[in-house]
Amino acid sequence: MRQRGFTLLEVMVALLLMGLFSVMAYRALDAVLQAEAHARGEIDRWRDLALTLGRLENDLNNAVAGVGGMQPRGFRLDADGLALAWDRLLPEDEAGGVRRVGYAYADGVLSRLLWREAAPIGELPLRTSVLPGLKSVLFRCLDGQGGWQASWPVTAADTGMPRAVEIVVELASGERIRRVLQVQ
Image (cartoon, rainbow, N blue to C red; front, side, top):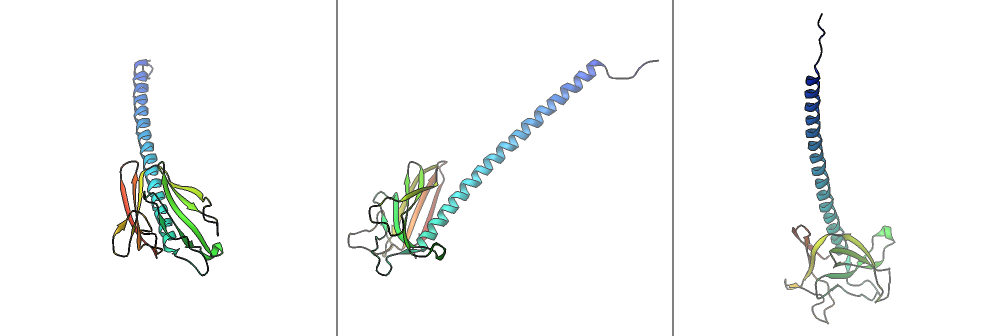
């Protein structure tokens, strides 16, 4: 009576094939996980950019030239186009009032600047990084005649607000995003 079963050679071939299939499945799963991580990073980067531009637009929509007896510090854009600041109305849930805000670019990072309410001129702001990993950022202001200005105020006598602010952001990967935001 002859016993039925697998030979040693058949078992070894089956193990070899299972091992090859396992390696191929692992490599495929690894590729999918790496693609997911890359896509998640891209989504996060674009979301952060959209949130930052939305916050900048909100700050500009609440810009004021001066309220009541308050001494306005005015809208300022540095001559190098890398930093701007203005006074803005605070929402009611922050007890109203006026606070100075701004945005500045340095060393690959766009930061939001926030001064204490009623801070004296010359006091340093609280600086919060809002968008790291940038190649460049440039701000410009639109004057009343429709011309773009690299600094604001244009003249020492000019105390008004620009009509709009342009921001051009160049990401580390080379993409350039340009937004023009109306100043209310």
